[in-house]
Length: 179
Length: 183
Image (cartoon, rainbow over all chains, first blue to last red; front, side, top):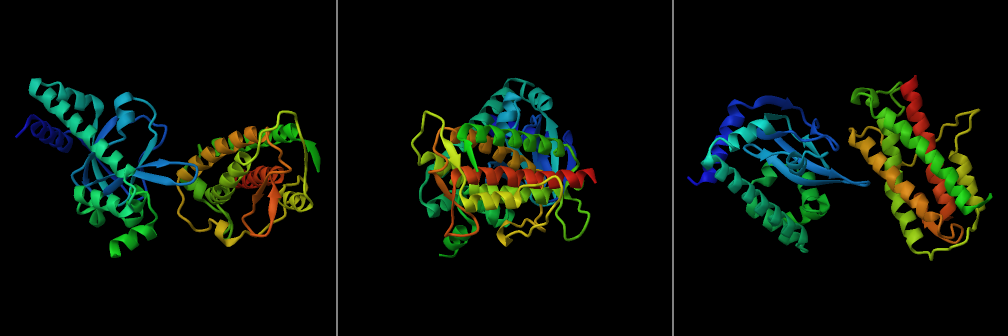
């Protein structure tokens, strides 16, 4: 295993053991705009979405399902008010671990630090993939890119949220899937 | 109605500020209180606010377009209401002496939707947008600029009337929401 894999495995196992178990019902908020994100979440079961609210609509920007590690990242890193909401979109069980605990884990020894750094690099790379998604003009192509990354997306997340993530209407998404 | 454009905007900004502050206070209520209703066929606080969001989603973009389509004017202009504009505004404006119930177009009716705190947050974002548009409207001819209306393709309103309608319509339903809370 690489340092990143070892660190991620360590992180997940401490999320499972040290993380506080919390259950959310469908539609319940885990974090709201303006609040400061102080935790990291591991999704044990269910599904959650991170979204941005504008004057007119909600824009889904990230999903978490079974096995995902997720939070409102910029707020967590900078300790600034979150621009995003995090909402449970099914009955969801999370393991919640504080930033302090994640820090302690990352700073445990040299290998952990290397692993943590490598995990952050992966996250940055994923953000760039997402940026390319949003710059991709063709809706069909956008869907294809996302399905390559998450083949089981439609099994986990309701269609209307996937449509918002892809920046298209639910009708367009249905049409593309059926053609 | 005839009024100096900048004076009209000042009046509308004051009412807008009041509406915003009232809703900011309502935001502190528990979500269950915001969803509560006193009669099955009446709106909850969140339904009142969502109704305004539906209007805002139609009107804010058309107001913005109307402003951007105009050349800016440097000296203050007089705004003159149209007959139909004045009629609409007086229809929805609240009067201290009586509350007249009105019915709502189906596409603007939030009845029975599942609503959350984002309804309030979105409203507050729309209020910021409205305030910014009011500030910009001062610098265009609000009699010459027009917007479409949500109820008919055949009517256009003068920008000044659309702004009056928006602001008084918001005041009406924010008062309604506040009354639900007080009762």
